[in-house]
Length: 81
Image (cartoon, rainbow, N blue to C red):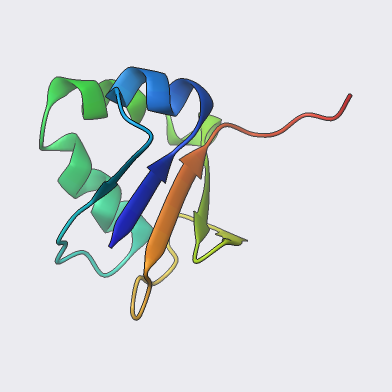
């Protein structure tokens, strides 16, 4: 599965994307797997209320299923201007 990181999430993790194998069934489960990897992931995912997530380019919630998903993207909320 491809994981994409944007804005300050990318800066905290130190890369824009990675491909991983996961056993997670939901986005929340994936986040827990990532946080268990290294401190930089713990920092990036320490406040989920400050993050948005998209599964296969569709904005969703952290309880969304990963069944059949190819891509998950994490990014801060967008603001207009």
